[in-house]
View 1 (cartoon, helix red, strand yellow):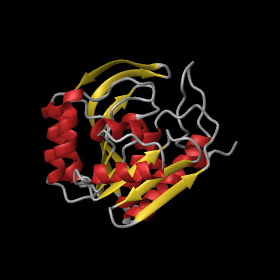
View 2 (spheres, rainbow, N blue to C red; view 1 turned 180 degrees about the horizontal axis):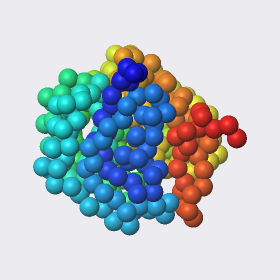
View 3 (cartoon, rainbow, N blue to C red; view 1 turned 45 degrees about the vertical axis):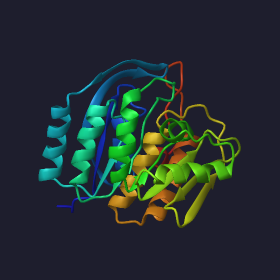
View 4 (spheres, rainbow, N blue to C red; view 1 turned 120 degrees about the horizontal axis):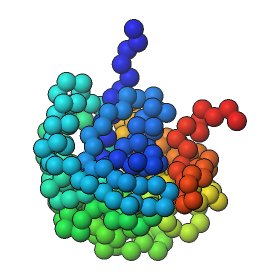
Length: 265
C-alpha cells in the first residue's frame, strides 16, 4: 500500500467545459503529484464561447462539503476560486480561519470570456474577510483594479498593486501580469522581499483556465512543504508549459494543457 500523497482542497465553481474551475484544479493537482479534493460552490454551464448560466450552491452545502473533507481526511493546503456571492465569501472565510493549512486565494472576478463570476457587492467581503486569511493571494491585473482601484501600466504599477493587496492582510501577493505587454511578468512579494518571475509570452490564444491552474499549482507546492517563493516558481514553470501547449476545443477559447508533461506526441 502506498503512502497517501499530500492533500489539497479546492473551493471553487464547476466548469462544465473542463478548462477552468474545479476541473482545472483537480487536473493540476494530479499532474503535480498531490491528492485533490473539492468543495463545489457553484455550477456553471460553460464552454469555449463563455458562460451560459451559473447556479450558486447554498452556504450550508458548501459548509457541509468542507467539513466532510477537512474533519475526516485533512488538508495540507486549500485553494479558493469562484465564490460568487458575499454570503459564500464569508462562509468560506470563516471555514478557512479555523483550518491550520496554507491558503491560496484566487479572487476570481470574471471569466476568460468576460463573464462576471463574483457579485459586485461581494468585493468588500473579499477585501475584509477572505484576503486576511490568505497565505498567497493571486489576483490578475483586472482583479487588482476591482479590489483596489490600482491600474497597472508598468513595473512600478505592479509594486503599487502588490502593496494595495497586501494592505488587506495576505502574507504574500502574487500579481499576475499576464495582461501586461511583453513577457509574461509576475511579481511575488510579502512587502519585504521581491521575486520577479518572467517567462516568454507564447503566441497561443487557448489560455482558458490559467488563473485556476496557477493558483492550484501554488497550493500543490505548499502542500508538499515548499516555501512560498519556490512553490510559486515551480507553479509558474508548470503553467507556462500548459499555456504553450494549450489546444483548441469548440469554436472559441480552448484550455491550457494540464497534462503537457505527460504527452508523448
